Image (cartoon, rainbow, N blue to C red; front, side, top):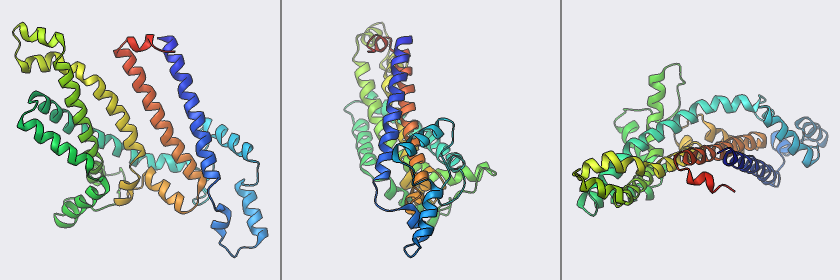
Length: 315
């Protein structure tokens, strides 16, 4: 297990290093000058040079990359060009919106997907199975931003049960949860559809295993064999998908946050791109990549704890 953990940790660090280099270089080759964008087209060369010096844009590229890397290691992401505050403060503030939204959406997705997947598998090739899988196919194909606008039209504009956008803060938890409900539903629908199909397939495969047939031969009903023996083993790939979905929900909510005007990481990245605030864009993208890679690492560890064969396969 120690060797497995060491190999996975080295892989994690290498992935983060490569991702940071790619993010830094991609943003550096983008056309446009942040200093000129901030001062306007008619600014004097002296003012432009002074601002570039102040922002640290005149340093050599390797020095800027290593400085950014060293700062991230101690939690210092630099100062935002636009907001003139530490980027770390901006990220922490916005994370208090994006993280609860991702957890809320994942909870809704799980509560919908597992019962639907179990019900479809228990009635394989029946009307319930075909109906459930047909609905999940629609859920996968439906763009979540379009579904989000339908939710706003139905529940905010017509019924007035929820607000159409904005976030009141966590001073009033009830109002905060209400503000996140429609965005969470919009994010959860496609993820629940995917998870339900994975749950169904995994459970059907598990129900065909020898130990389940043995349990049936000993007198258990199909339902008892499903709930007592098959479901627990069928959840292993489902838990893996859930971990990957959480990282996707955290990183992929940019459009939904803009639809509902939520001050999360996605909207911060969008605003920073519009303002050419590259240091914010770079840091937010790196945080999201870090979340995706770290969650994948934790899923690998959890999977290895469940299935010891994976530890023996570690290089």
